[in-house]
Amino acid sequence: MAYRFVLDMPEALHESAKAAIATARDAMVLIERHPSPSNAEEARAELSVSAHTLDVIDVVYRWLADSGVPGDVYLEAYKGGRFPLVEHDPKALRRLIQGNQYWYENTMPNVHYLDAGMMEGGARVADVPYGGRTASGLAIAPVENQVTLGPVDHVAVRVKDIYRAEVFYQDFFGMSVSYRARREDDRWQHLPDDFDWVERHRTGIEPDMIRMENGAIALVIINAGAAAVMHEARVAYISVSAPQETLNNLRGRALFASYSIQEDSPRAFRFSDPFGISWQIVAA
Image (cartoon, rainbow, N blue to C red; front, side, top):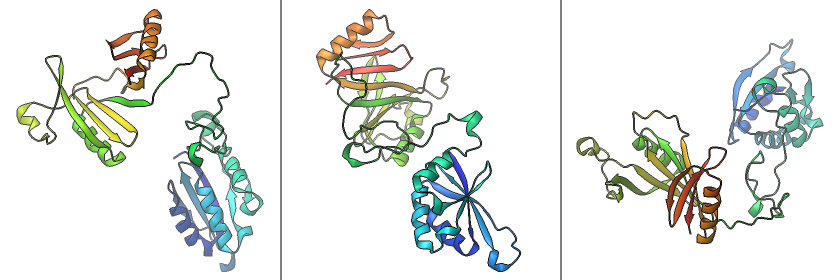
C-alpha cells in the first residue's frame, strides 16, 4: 500500500473510527495502540492506517462530522508534528500525508496529490493523472499529423501456465472466454467450446491462445510453455484497430524507419516501436 498515517483520538471514538475506515474500498487499520493515560478521562487511541489511495480521507472527515468532537482528532506525522483535523480540509490533509511518507525520498518519486479533474461522463478516472479525458476534451499539445485510429482491440500477454491464467482472469476480472485456439500446421484451429482441461494431459492438446473479454476490455493470453525462459516482455503486444488507409500508412512509415516487423499481412501488421513496445494494427 502506498500511504500510511496515524490518527490520534479519544479512546471512546476508536471503535467507530475503525468501523468507518473499514468501509473505505482500499484502506485498513494496521496497528492499534492505546498509550497508558494518567487518568481514565485522558485515555487516547492511535490508529495506524494504510491505504492504496487517499479516498479514505473523505471517509474520515464524514466520520469526524458525525463524531461530535471534531477538534480532538489529530494526524500524527512521521516527521514530527501533531495536526488537528478540524484545522485542515480533506484536500490539505491529503497534501500533508503525501509529503509525510518517510520512504518517498529514496524509494518513490515525489508525486504530489492532484485533485483529479472531471473526466468523461463526470467520473473521476484515477487519483493520479493516468488516462481519462478532461471534460473540455481539448488537448494541451495538439498535433498537425492526424492519424485515424480505432479503439484498442486487445492486449496480449505471455504466460507459462495458460490454464492458471484463464482461471485467474475469469475470477479476478470477471472475464469470459471468447475462444480457445491452437496452432496446427501453420494454421489456427479453434478448440471446441466444451474443451476439457483435464483431457489435455492425455491428448497433449491444449490452447496456444485464449481470448477473454469483459465489456470493452479484451485480453489475449499466449501460451509460452512451462519451460519458457521469459526474457521478453510479458506484455506481448497492444492491438489497435484502424481504417485500412491508416494501416497502410503506418505500415509504410514503420518499414521506412526500419522498425522490427513481427507480422505483415494485408489486413494486419505488428512492429516494435523505438521504445521496445510491440504494436499490432488491425484493419477495422
